[in-house]
Image (cartoon, rainbow, N blue to C red):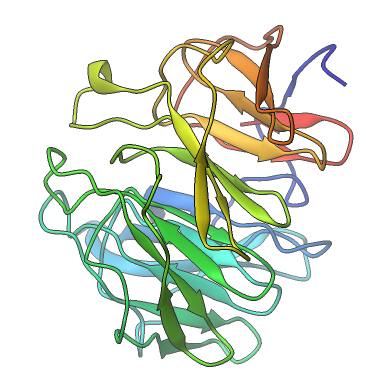
Length: 288
């Protein structure tokens, strides 16, 4: 499984970021989400035309297999960056972020590509405003964890659970959680959230090599060993293979076994990197 990493500069929609957007759009920070067996919707803050006016963009797959950018503003969340977005199977969830390097925001909305409409998410019980947090889909809930308040010097070590079916938030324990960080990476294993790395202020020199495992059913955390872990990382990627976590960053790559709480170094090709995208296809890791 670990013989090589496969890199593709322009992966197809089934595997990751599809960079083709219709119209004169200059896409800024964005997150790629995967539509299983259909394509990849992308939520972005973009600038259009000569005036470069910021707007929301949702890129949806068309009949020609390309992504087409559509700006739907009614009911959409306010303009923001450092915003994770999740695909639930029927909806795109967007919550949190920062208003262009300023304060974090604590609201969000759900986008239905069938009706092309946004529905605001409840703010009752939601986490405090933040950006650069992790957000994972469990199958029926979104987990939001960590991030920073908007000022990169104020990382957070708490989170909450959002259920779209009832439009409700529930708290999650922070007892035994990893240290407060932003720009960490995380995966959902089917029963647990694995969070590792991140940084404590704006400078990557404050990146950490620690993490934690959150068990959803029991609402409890346990620490991850640092023995054999990669060097400290932030803005890296992690994927779940079904058996283990693979992580790749600017300083190295490794696999982590949550059951055994053990790390194994991995050979790396391509070169170390950060702020990239990574996807597991079922038998290999694709990096863009």
